[in-house]
Amino acid sequence: MNKMASLSSKKTGFLSSLSYQVRHLTMSRANCNIINSNNNSNKYYDLVVIGGGSGGLACSKEASQLGKKVAVLDYVSPSPQGTSWGLGGTCVNVGCIPKKLMHQASLIHSAVQDSYSYGWMDSNNASLNVTHDWNLLVDNVRNHILSLNWGHRVQLKEKKVDYYNCFGRFVDNHTIEATDKNGKKMSLSADNIVIAVGGRPAFPDQVPGAREFGISSDDIFFLKEPPGKTLVVGASYVALECAGFLNGLGYETSVMIRSQPLKAFDEHLSKLVLDHMEAEGVEFLRDSTPLRVDRIINESGKTELQVSYSTRTDNSNNNGSQEMHKVAVDTVLFATGRRAATTDLKLDILGIQTDVSTCQIPVDDNDATSLPNVFVIGDAALGRPELTPVAIMSGKLLAKRLYSNSSELMDYKMVPTTVFTPLEYGAIGFTERQAIDQFGEENVEHFLYRCSMHFISHWSITYHSVTAINVILRLFVLPLKGGRELLVFI
Image 1 (cartoon, rainbow, N blue to C red):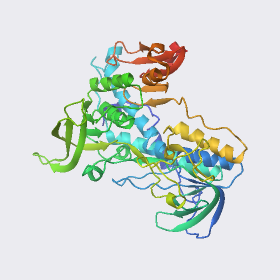
Image 2: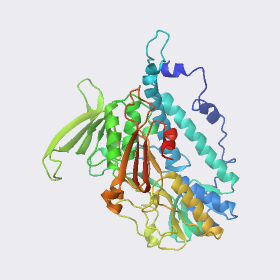
Image 3: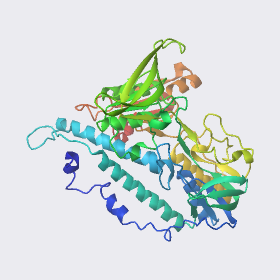
Image 4: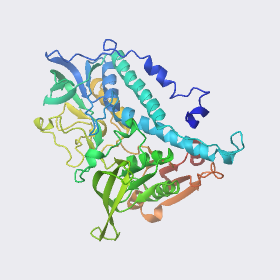
C-alpha cells in the first residue's frame, strides 16, 4: 500500500469520499433533462446558449430564472489523444478544479518534506518517508469531477433549462442546427443566441509528431499511467502550473521556453516564480524551440519520446546561431497557447469574423457581435480576461440586460488572477512596467516584502510585492498561504 495513502487511511478525506458519492449517482436520462435529438421538429426558445461551461451555464440559469425559455447545447470534441469529458466546461473538467487538486497534492508533498523541521517525525524519530500513487490521485480527482458534472445537470433541471448533449452550428442568426454524437440532427430557433464555447489547447502544427505523440492540459488529468519524465513545452501559466505540480509529485520535469515566460505578468515577479521552480528541481530549456517529436525504442528496449529542438545561442539577436539538441522523455505536454472553439460554428454564414491567431470573436461593451442578437462571453470573446469568475459574471449580467431591463455592463478592468505555480502568484492591477509607462518611473515605487511563515523550511522565497503611486496600483502575492499576509497592506 502506498505510504502516503496509508498515512491518511484512518481519516476519510474530501477526495476519498467522492468515490462513494459517484457510485451512488443514478445518472439516468430520465432524471436529467437531456432532450432527445431524434425529434426533427423545430423547437423555439427565447435564448439558446452554445457551450456548457462556466459562462454558458451562468447565463442560461439566470435567463431561466427571469422567466425565459432557455436551452443549452454542449458537446466536447475529443482531444487528439481521444480525451473527452462531461458538462461544465474547461474549469470543471480540465482546468481550475483538477489543476488545483493536483497543485494541492504537490504542496502536501512539500509540507511532508518540511514537517521534520517543525518537529514531525516517524516512530523512529526520522523524517517522514512517503511515496505517491498517481492512479489513486487521478481516480479521486476524476470522481470529484464526475460529481460536478452531475451537479450541473441537476441544476439545469431545477432551473428548467433544456440541455442538449449536441454540437451546435448556425443556420442563420436565429437558427441553430444541433447534432448529437450519433449524427442525428434537429433545429432550434431563438430570439437571442449566446456563444460560450470556450477554448481548446493549440498544438504547434509546424512540429511533426506534436499532435500525434504529445498531450495537452486536456489530457494530463486523465492519464492512466504516471507521466514519468516529462517535458512541458510553453511559457504560459498553464505550462508552468503543470510543470510545477508534476515536479512536486516527484516526476522529473523540464520546461522548454522560447521567449519571456508569463508575458502578461510582472517580469520581476515572474522571475521569482521561475527561480523558485528551478530551486525545486525543474529544469528550464531557455531560448529553445521544438522541431519534431518521435517515438523511439531506447537501448534498454523501453519506448520513449525523442524531442529534437534548437536553442538560440545569441540572445540579443532572434536570427542568431542555433544549436541542435535532442532529449528523451516519457511524456511531452504542449502548453503553447489556446484557440477559441469557434471554427465549426459556421460563423461565415452570419458574416461574423474571428481573430486569425486565436479564433476569438470581436464583441462590443454589451458582449454583442456584429449582429445585435448574437452575443459572445467567456474565452471565446476577443480581448476578455480568460478567467472563470469573469465568464460567470459576464453571463449573469448579459442575461439581466436582455431580460430584466438592466443596463449594467461587465467591468473587465482590474480583475484579480492567480497563477498556481509552486510559489503561487496572485495579482491585481498594473504591472510595474505598465505603471511606469503610464505614470513615469519617478512616480512609481516598488516594495518587496518577504513572508515570515517559512523561515525554517525549504520555502525560503515567499514574497509579497506592491507597486504604488499615491495609491496602490497593483498588489502581487507570491505565497504558500497569503491571506494573513495581505492584512499587512490593508
